[in-house]
Length: 330
Image (cartoon, rainbow, N blue to C red; front, side, top):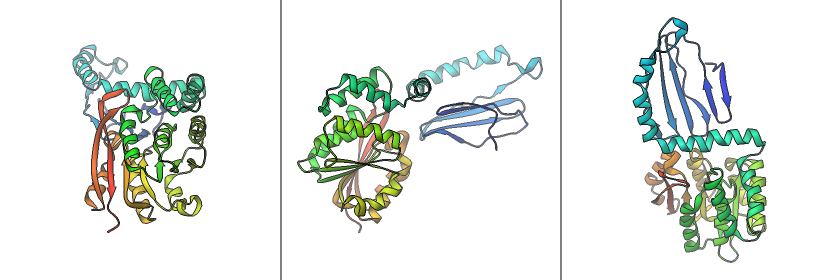
């Protein structure tokens, strides 16, 4: 079905559909992880809202419309649903706050400034952080995310888990899928053992340009941190031939959760995981990667552990980092 006419914002689409009897729209994607359903018939609206795949808000409203008088809604009917709306707002206030900060306000600022959020974050880092000091740069990004704009980065809570594992495993080579602004890249790079190497992959060239500047600002050269621009699906088969990666001792999946399973299987198929390699996967609970987790637990190739965490600046929204230990292809 053609969705028109509609009011389009960056990241969100609000539809106004003809009121034909029994007309129904299929779920459509408004942005990564956000889905909206609209069903409309001759005398009622029904809608549902799912926040970040896996977090279902059970919203089902049937609102009778007065036919005639311009099709206006009765004030009494509107007031009858007020307690339900208030209850939903209170119960899911953290998700609504996340929606406002991560989608609505970000989209508005993108339009007004002409810059992406990671570009605005880097401008802040340039004027407030100490060059050559990764710790201070990371702290500056944390402060900017909590005080200015929600960055949606890994954050200090998950960062401690990542740094502890890198220091504990002392990997000679680390592969990161999903550089984003470079926050987790700096965490890994500063915890690498002497001579350690990090390859980080980012599919968006504009985002990668910002991350490259941040990495070099922190003092890491290309021998320590190599940033590869391209989709993980295309880059993984080329890692051994073009980037001299024989195998990775530690892999961080931090791009799109829906791609985790595909990319893990690609790493297996191209024998890029060393014996007892550690695979870390962020956001496995929110927005969630159920197929990835099911595969890791059932295929017999991994020992699995889940680190329960919350989202940065939204600790009430539960998330987790999956830690997989590779047992080998057998």
